[in-house]
Length: 179
Ligand code: FES
Image (cartoon, rainbow, N blue to C red; front, side, top):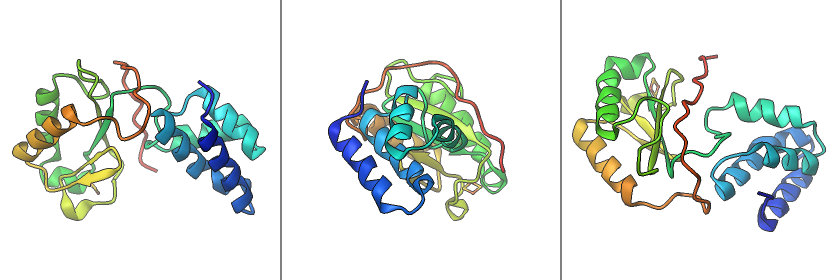
């Protein structure tokens, strides 16, 4: 699906704003993900074209950062942190509880297409609120089973945070090693 005109205009504006075009890659990826729900190979090609950079550079950036989705997933993206500080405050139990409540394994999408979830060993930068998870682009901290229930119930009713309604997939996402 070609990018919408406002997204193309945004990428062109980003290309003009930064002295180095490489600085525009991450905001351009965000612009595409907000429009389409994920960043397809086709969209990466368009970004490369508008920024005048090799497509391999766009792909390398999109695949390096776990916040970018490179294939369609559920309406909502839930990432639960299982790095050491969160683990010490019960992240394992919260991840197991989330898995039971959603009825799908790590990396999969719920049957109603509402939620794709996965765990990550990358610290998400909110250790003070451990255990925590990232729901779309916001943090949910100090998780308990009750809080997870409330969050999941809300997400099942909420539309996607972006305009596009991505198709479902049950393929697991690749977890990235901590750098
Ligand atoms: S270890 Fe989980 S947010 Fe830092």
